Image (tube, rainbow, N blue to C red):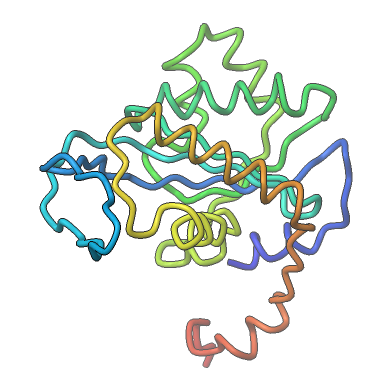
Length: 208
């Protein structure tokens, strides 16, 4: 926890951008019955019947200090999918950065080994040298600012909707992050290590 909080206290540095990453599963759903066209004087009725048509995984990247976020749905959540998104982040989003400081949850797909499963050893090592990983603790995913972005995405874009394909979902995700990037400033994270040592004192070991 203190390691992640220390990262958040760093000042902005374009050579070492701080990026938060998270992902969540998403259930693709379709209406079971074709919707009827609206008619004057007829109250709209909600059809609660639906059918599951698949699953996918939503990946989110955000740079809190500049207010940038990117969201994309992929059909699967595999090590190679994570590795390819990391390569995209390094080579296309931050090609001039010396290192990207990546804050992420400690999942089995999140690690340097994923790079070696997706790319040659030379390429994996090239990418690994430009990464600085910082993992949130177990039961401490709330420390990941990308999780906050996923919560906002759920309430502002996905809540209560039925989306039946990855292509349709990505269209909605692109529209959401494009709009938010234009209108929202950076994230002002105010919870510090000093705050944690007072407010979360109960989780620290007791030294006798």
